[in-house]
Amino acid sequence: MKKSEFSFIGDIAKTFAKLPHNGFEPIGDDCTVLDMGSDALVISTDMLVEDVHFLRGASSPEEVGYKSLMVNLSDVAAMGATPTAVLLSLSLSEATQGEWVEGFMRGFYEGCERYGVALVGGDTTASRDKVCINVVAIGRAPMSNIKRRSAARVGDLICVTGKLGASSKGLVDIMFGDLNTPAAKIHRTAQARIAEGKLLGEHDAVHAMMDVSDGIASDIKHIMEQSGVGAEIYLEVVPTDYDIRFATTGGEDYELLLTVAPERFVEVAEALRAATGTPLTAIGRITEGGELVWLDNGAPAEIELQGFTHF
Amino acid sequence: MKKSEFSFIGDIAKTFAKLPHNGFEPIGDDCTVLDMGSDALVISTDMLVEDVHFLRGASSPEEVGYKSLMVNLSDVAAMGATPTAVLLSLSLSEATQGEWVEGFMRGFYEGCERYGVALVGGDTTASRDKVCINVVAIGRAPMSNIKRRSAARVGDLICVTGKLGASSKGLVDIMFGDLNTPAAKIHRTAQARIAEGKLLGEHDAVHAMMDVSDGIASDIKHIMEQSGVGAEIYLEVVPTDYDIRFATTGGEDYELLLTVAPERFVEVAEALRAATGTPLTAIGRITEGGELVWLDNGAPAEIELQGFTHF
Image (tube, rainbow over all chains, first blue to last red; front, side, top):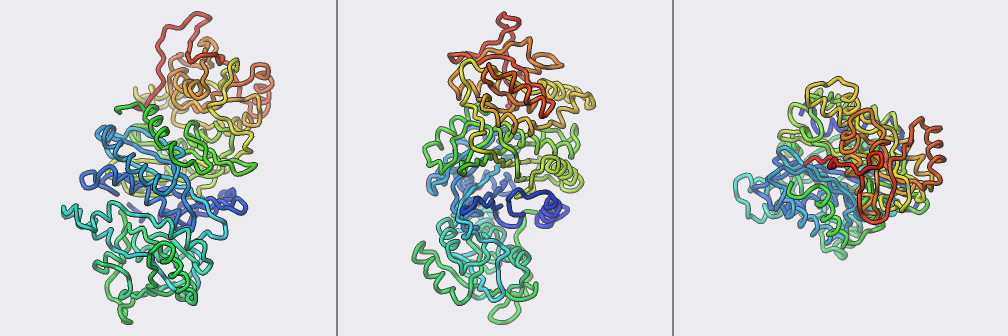
């Protein structure tokens, strides 16, 4: 691509911002937000393309269906909202119009059932060659619970739920033909942090929040840019069972990345663990200025860290 | 495709209807509806695939961008609602990542500007081969204005806005290499009936409504099935400048197809013409039973009429 995904989206957002917003917030978070009085509606959209986001030879159709749903529910959870409904568009090649799509729909249904989400619309059509999937997820929350990328404050602790790196380690395993490693399984069946997103939304000590879809090295920059702050991250405490490069630049973990008022970190982490069993780990701090600094046991880290991109 | 688009959607809708609806209406109309108290939100999604819905050699990128928007705004208008916002997902092949997508976005922007619609979210990604476009359109209307396919009543007049058939005649022209006929131009630059949909939504004499995307021969069946009624259509009064087959089985006209209480047809048609300049033509009548009957000057028509399908 001539421009990276992010600058391209930046240009589009800037151009279209000249038009009336009609009650919606401007582009910039995992979802758009429509204020409906006491309640807010959040809406996200994500496209998955065969041979770019998934390989039909490496994932079962059930896994692709389930994951297509999860990556979108994750966007809703990252806003502090609870997903209520989805719309699904599918373009199907000749080879996928029978058993494959039925398996896909079984996986999609399993996720909808697990999280109480309604399928409320969609579109199916043919494609000449590759499968293309678009999922729209809709969620609701009290307006005061909605978390945005622009809300980080200097001094906040940068935190993540769960552990990082398994999904991208799994992708590498799959690329080398090891389809059945624990990490490969995690890559194919990501779980969105639905209950965690809702609970963290309810805490006003949680300031900015988003999901980890491109790796924290890339994702933290969105929070920095939109909040006008810097960040330092301590590599030695990033929670992972794998190489630190997977945990920082690998994508598709679908954990939550958030900033928390430091004096209330323990309270938030204990509430999260009590309600969901999921650990919250502080991995860094929001700083003044616009720099992203990586520290390894206090020393500047030398590895160049680039976020994962599909281009 | 093993099943047609419609039966496939029918199966999916039936399966997922077992899950909680979370305030949304079940699948069945051009958009899903969320009741927000006095107001309703309507949401539609549509996918367009290169070489299935458009040919890059036959349409300019501006035309593809404009049309991608219009087909979705048309779904919102068909509910009696006013479009307020859209989300756009694009997967772009190598060849389309520069000038082509810039032209596409210019066309998309032109439509957003013309109809006062905000772009509030999206996703861009690579594709290996073909361009895939997904547009989500969001609209609002008072709940009492929302028109559904299930609301037709026996005795209603079946009506259409404007004229039919130009778009499919234009598609045939394009397929034969005549890119610059008036019909070919109409095919590439469909106009959604935004003002007309809003006005018709305000009239309680208008019962069922949808947009003409697959041809009236196919589209009227959705109204019949969902309303549990039959229909007869009088071929000699179907408004068209082209062969009657284009006007009945050709797709992508994006006119509105609606049923109107017969004693109030003149009132509705005059209000529509006064406000928008668009004619409303009565082309048939809703009947008891489930049959679709075509009449040509009173005699049963012999042409077999099949709705347009992408499969």
